[in-house]
Length: 320
Image (cartoon, rainbow, N blue to C red; front, side, top):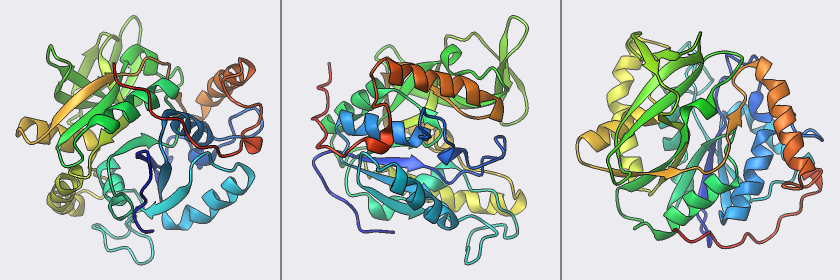
């Protein structure tokens, strides 16, 4: 882990250590843009435009070389450092349930970045496209939050706009109070459109029916460093469960939902105001390629991000 970075804007933590089991390859670096860019490259451009000043990629240590080689061809729009999510079964791993190769979940992934973050930060997935507006609202929130508080935020999207036509996806359904504060967040797995309906299953395997207009998380969070203590405590409590179930994972929604329930955190739901899409299944690829090509043709991004030069990012958009 590198030393914590400091700068005029917040840090962007990018979760890129996933196993990509449903995709069948390293989708974090999949060439999807018109000239071979990954979704990660577009995220860097959007984050820089919104005022983020550095990025920390959480990767498996054995994949760092692949990311560095990728950025040789597509110079990132933000300075990049790396944090390592230890995966059970890898050489040198001290995690529970040795012999398995499945990561321990998104809560553990964010915890892996702890040593490289000095102030407020956002968290995103490497394999999702969120749109520049999402980065702007997150940066604006982080610019105004007390860095020592447990006041966090999540960027929310309407469920119907986040579904894949190729198969099920995991989404965290958000419940809010009249002021827009998160009151509960529930992970729903295998969410997909059926015959005139949308449904999934909860972590216990029970069927869940959804309307499509629910606000859901695409794993875009805005945190202060205060969250690390909660993540560490939850991870320590989770390890015995992992010993008994080698595929169990600890996800951010579960940890933050528990913090809200105990009155130890306040989470504001920020409207994304933009379209989102991602690559969960291999069959998602043509849709994602088309969406990126359209945005390049409209002039929203350079024709080739390989030619994109790093520039001083503008200040974050003020909060309304």
